[in-house]
Image (cartoon, rainbow over all chains, first blue to last red; front, side, top):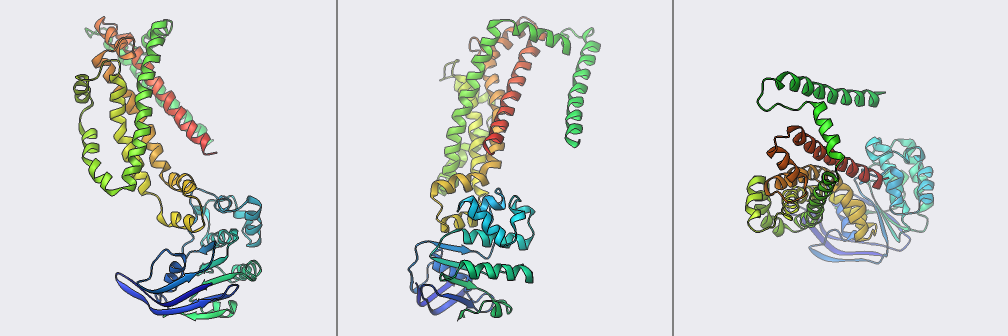
Length: 185
Length: 248
């Protein structure tokens, strides 16, 4: 579904990817690992077509793509439910919020949310789409152990047989996301 | 309770200034050659004018003058503001014109425009010219407030362009646009009525003011001014209400 062949990419101030190759099969879930600044987020942006490589080839064979960016990117003028309703029907939105344990925050605005609830709201929004490919950039940032557990079980259930790419640099994710690892250097 | 207290203080502030006007006018009235009409005299004159068809006719004429100019400036200013926000060359090219329109005194624009434009049309044109740069710059500033990351997310999620424009870009730009529209409305009244006073188109509130001044009917001058203030306040609040209702 995703093929990177000898991809190189550099920001004006810093090169991040050099001769990077990877492949992700349909239905497979992988985790990009590597130190901060190694280029994991850049790989996601290249998959999304938000950046273009300086050299190499990228092939992405997916119709609809859903993404959880590193930033929550909740629209400040809509409630949590409103943010989800933009992309799916309200019943599905409520169901997702309920599963992630934040149903009580449905009518709150992003400015009223704690970091952990905002992250889960953004995660819920990423799951509203019935996508061919899911991308998650540091999905558990700011979550306590209990919330991480809840989110993981929702992800496992919702993403069964779906193609997904996770970005994570946290040590605890090694145990909780036992996926094929792709190191980014 | 807090809202009630705030509303009560607002009413008391108005009552205070009206009382000061009444007492001040009564005290100075005997000494001045042209006495200042008291609040009660103004209300009496206002009631008298409201009883005449000509005054209501003039009110409608002025309302038409100001609203026509204002609406035209909202439409065109909105369009130009969007173009400025989207196209760098358009923003750079139009910047001197916007600055010029903002800097030139309204009286100077009225006199210059009067050379080419008939009196009946001048108040609308002046209201249009004075409000245009306000709407233009507020739309431009509003578009600068749009979070590019939010737009990027909606694009990735497959939201159609038109929906992104309406549900995302417009919502970010809305506070600035709203301020521009409300500010522009009061400027439209000030500039439009000023044009009516100077060029004196028949059957308008401006010509009523001129006539009242010429016949030394100062209570009438204040009464006509009161009508302008009342209309401006009604329209301003109607605009705020429409905006509020539309967002529900």
